[in-house]
Image (cartoon, rainbow, N blue to C red; front, top):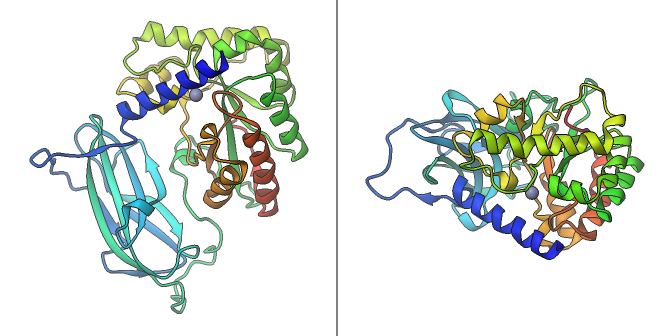
Length: 357
Ligand SMILES: [Zn+2]
């Protein structure tokens, strides 16, 4: 039943969020670990404008991930996500860069959270001033209007952020399909904009409708693995893990094997709900998979309205960004309508839409 599946999907997502700490809790007093993480540049008190590189250190015991946000005058309710990394940054290095132009001049806080595997985190705050109206510093790079953010995810996967000609690339991904209604509409829309995307399919859905995958393969989109059952991979042993992934690959082969190279194998895995534990990456790698997260999540499965979905994606888009949308698991006509706006508006900004290679 679609309703149950959607509910189940959200439940798993929620469970995974709790497990991997997308809603982490501050470490209790006395539990703070003393590692030298923190933001190095811009230094506290700096006035910035244009493309602002943020460098720092993000490491420590039981490291799970780091996340960088920008808060107007320390107002955590209005935090803007800047970047996230799943690998420790042990020496001072680039964490992200952001364009100050969309922000009103004033006082802001850069917030770096270094999250541990238990969900607790250490927080490092740097007060800065955004001063877009100040005269341009002489050293302002010529490419300042180009990138809003450096994508740590796409870069970590070795994906290009731009074409050789300099055009920004957006990686659209669709999870939890295929479904008989949404998948063909999405494929048709992508076609109209000469866009390629990646479909993270769920085995259970695929088994119910092998035919729905054919248009995806025929159009040359990338098919990727979102597990057979959509159960979290957290805590699963290697055999169960392998079964989840192999089941999908077998179904893809029977659905569209004739359209794919004889030696094809699925290369990318998105764990359900993004849930990972200490073993997920290594087990996935042992099975020949690369983990793919996302940079932009408009939460289309919550059905906030097509405009809200497209607005989030268009506003947050940056070269190399990976966008999470759904052709199953709560995706709806809102997703389809939003996709049309996303394709139209971002094409207008010069974006190309590519599948994971
Ligand atoms: Zn999913």
